[in-house]
Image 1 (cartoon, rainbow, N blue to C red):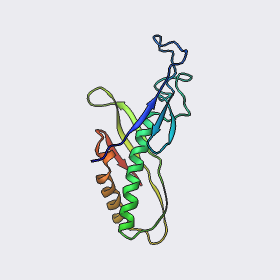
Image 2 (cartoon, one colour):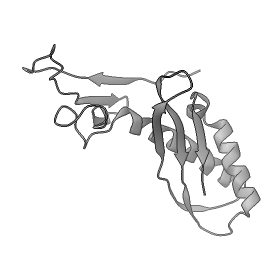
Image 3 (cartoon, helix red, strand yellow):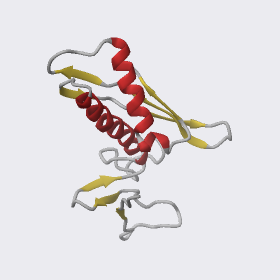
Length: 151
């Protein structure tokens, strides 16, 4: 067991509150000292009440799934004797009504692009590495929605 903590800080300032006219911008702070500007997604709350340049929770969920998958994939590839020089992904989180009628991230799609530093695995081995990384990724294991790896 391990505990992971994130701090969230938001202040209203002098903006009205009851009329919903307040900013959704806030800050995420992590134990290593990193701080990220965060906000609601501009598709949920229109700018200027949201900050489209900040990270929104939906993007963060896609990034968390992609990062977790990548970290397990890198470890598995190394253990299998494959060298990776670069790993890029463009993760997407699809927000829509689920089977309960609730807004939910129903699907996260990962599209990893890998540059190998030597011999490349065959298609079956590559698929197996992705499948095993997916099974081990505790972020993906925590989601109700589907996680798909393409490519």
